Structure formats: structure tokens, C-alpha cells
Amino acid sequence: MHIDPHTRGRQWLESKDVRPTKQRLALATMLVGDGRNRHVTAESLYEAASRAEASVSLATVYNTLRLFCKAELMNEIMVEGNISYFDTRTDQHPHFYWEDARELCDAPTETLKFESIPAPPEGAEIARVDVVIRLRKTP
Image 1 (spheres, one colour):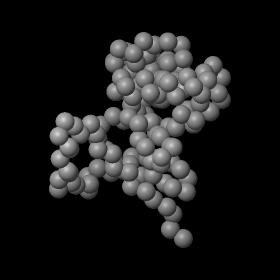
Image 2 (cartoon, one colour):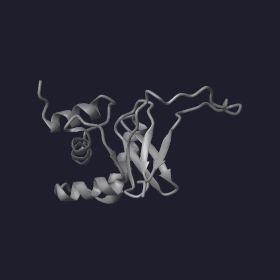
Image 3 (tube, helix red, strand yellow):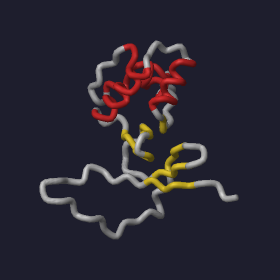
């Protein structure tokens, strides 16, 4: 069954009770409208929205991505002190970060194994474990 991108974006928002405002719906459609997962920065999503003539500011993109993360529609992956990627795939999985191209993509999970991880300090719980494997092209 084919679902048009706009409907898919609306369903994605409604699945977590996020009110589908015009701007949220435009960004959701860009993120999940074709049914594929995305890794975006706020800047790359803003540029794509501008090319699509969606009327959103960079501040709105940042705020919307943070809202989507809070609603658990996306995860934020920090790769540098000032660079965040936002991932529409929300299950636990590792990432490859291509340093030269500054791109983030999913890494295979089959061979990643943890024997154990440190216990959190008293009064804390582990929210998520992010594994980012940094890559660069060989000479």
C-alpha cells in the first residue's frame, strides 16, 4: 500500500501526539515522507527546506528537531562538541561518522558486542548508549 509523503509525515507526528502544525508537518514530510531513515543536521534540513520553498527559519528547524527528540520521534547524536545529527531511526544502533565528508550513517549491528558497560553512578540511570565509529578514507 502506497502512502503519500504528506500522510506519512502526519502519521509520524501523530504517533507520538505531536501537533502537526504547518511547519512541523513540512519538516516531518521531508524527514520521513519517503519511508527512509535520515541523519540530518539542523543546517542541512534548513537548506533542504529552503530549496523546497518551505517557510521555516533556522531557529524553527532547531526547535522542531529538539521537539521531535523530546517526543522520541528522533535521536540526537553528538559527533563533535558543536555538531549534532538527528536520526529518525530510534532503536539502539551504532553509527559511522565520515570525518572528511562530515556525514553520519548507520553501521551494521551484527558484529558490535558489549561484554559489559559501567554501572551508572548512584541516583542516575543510563538513558542511551551512542556508538560512533569515526572513519576517514585511506590514502
